[in-house]
Image 1 (spheres, rainbow, N blue to C red):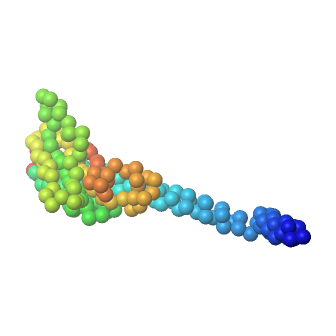
Image 2 (cartoon, rainbow, N blue to C red; image 1 turned 90 degrees about the horizontal axis):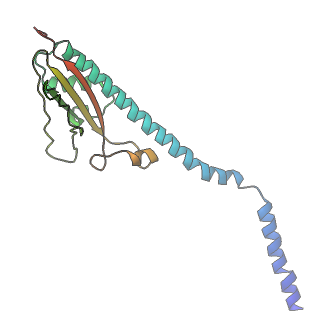
Length: 190
């Protein structure tokens, strides 16, 4: 008699409760939210990161092109590193701490060897107390010049899929590089 009561009583009630619990749909929206919310947030943050990176890259390109236009037309005779850096930073408004994070290389192209700038851009290492030296030669009349600007900045969200795949130069900052060329006009700036 004791075995019947246990077999039909507690076990049957437990089975009935489990069937009722399984057939309820109260938590469906919560489960969907818990599964899908992180996916949408990561997607949103990654899109924001890519958008900011592209905006900064476009603004650096534009600022360098406008500044090089001044060099091309001979408005600066001879150009100084500080003047060119200030001109680029003034026009690239969205780059944070531009004067400290931007390095500029300016060098003439040899007419005999046509040696370009090195493949690896010289960028500022924010963790280093001494910054790398860049070449900055104003060039002479009718000389082809290459100019490269490198700005270093931190990603907004390093933990997103895109932020983790950014090529970091010092473990926490990525570099935006822009390059342009121009020819020093004869008698410009006089």
